[in-house]
Amino acid sequence: MTSLLQIENIHTFIGQFHILEGVSVDVPQGNITVLLGRNGAGKTTTLKSVMGITPPREGKVIYKGEVLNGKKTHHIARMGIGYVPEHRAIFKTLTVKENLEMAAREKNDLKNSLDLIFELFPDLKRLIDLRGGNLSGGQQQMLSIARALVPENDLLLIDEPSEGLAPVIIEDMMRAIKRLSDHKTVLLVEQNFHVASKLADSYVIVDEGHSVHTGTMADLRNDKALVKRFLGVA
Image (cartoon, rainbow, N blue to C red; front, side, top):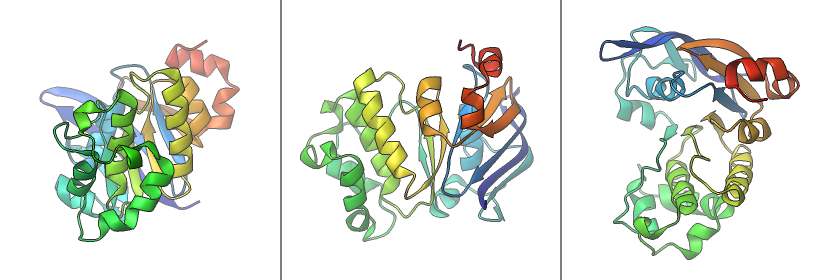
């Protein structure tokens, strides 16, 4: 299967702290790949390294065969990578429509993407004129992902989409992301193993800044000892 994104043995520092000490991830085109690991393992830093927010000092990040190292974040985004950070980075004083308009890179981006956005997140259609700050946590998360769908992105990096959401909202989010994978390739960070195990096709476990295990999610679901060892889930 063709790899859309390859992360090859990257080392990333934040200030003087060596956060990633050798992380490798292969993201097959058309799949959902999830980064798993305990808090502080380096999962979010891996996504930020791809985007050039915390550029790796060693190793390579390759997207569609092109090395991303040294490129500015806005250049990487224009290559077709959408980034959905944790904590729902939306403009709370702007309406849903204005938030979506702000995400456009080209004149017709929003017009061309609205059908898909409303198919995945029908609530946003009826809330289109409501300010972001008046949305529920789940609706804000929907809007955050929808913003990454406005430009013509082939790869989405989504960080902790279920964080802080009620179980019923998580189920809705899971269904939307699963349907989203019919259209986009997804690299996901998800702390909730139940959510990750239902969504992902493949996984990479990150532990103390290293990628330590990778494989199919079907195999991981059956490996209780590995899940317990690295994720603390019985």
